[in-house]
Amino acid sequence: MSSHVISLTVNGQAIERKVDSRTLLADFLRDELRLTGTHVGCEHGVCGACTIQFDGEPARSCLMLAVQAEGHSIRTVEALAVDGCLGALQQAFHEKHGLQCGFCTPGLLMTLDYALTADLHIDFSSDKEIRELISGNLCRCTGYQNIINAIKSVSPTTEIAKSEELV
Image (cartoon, rainbow, N blue to C red):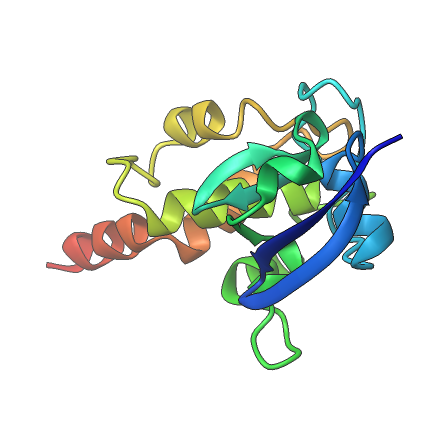
C-alpha cells in the first residue's frame, strides 16, 4: 500500500501528515487529527453527517480521499466554537432544541454556517427555502422544525424581516 505526505490547513492550522493513499478524508480527520465532530453515517455521501467545508464550500468528507486535500483548506464543526464556547449557530441549536441524538448536527451546522456566510440569496424567513437548503442533510429524530427555528433565530434575513415588521 502506498502512502503520501500531505500538507493542508485544518481549522486554520497548518498540518503535515503521512497518510495511506486510500484513507478517506473523514477517517483522516477523525482518526489521525482526532476531530471527531465530523461524523460518518452512510459512507456514500447521501446523509450529510460528514459535511465539512473544503476551501470554503460544503463537501462530503466520506467521498474524498485525504490525499485530495493536499494544499487545501478544511474547516470542521470544531471551528465553529468561539474561545471554547458554542458559536452562535451551535447555541441556537441548543436553545431551540434543534437536535436530539446529535448525529446529523455537525453536518447540518457546516451546511448552515456556509449558507449564512455565503451570498446565496436564501430567504431565511422561509421554511421552504431552509428545508431545500438542508435537504442534503438527513435527520431521523427531529422532524426538522426545530432546526428551522434555530436557523431562523440567527439568520440576518430573519433579523432584517423582524426589524421591518416593527416599522
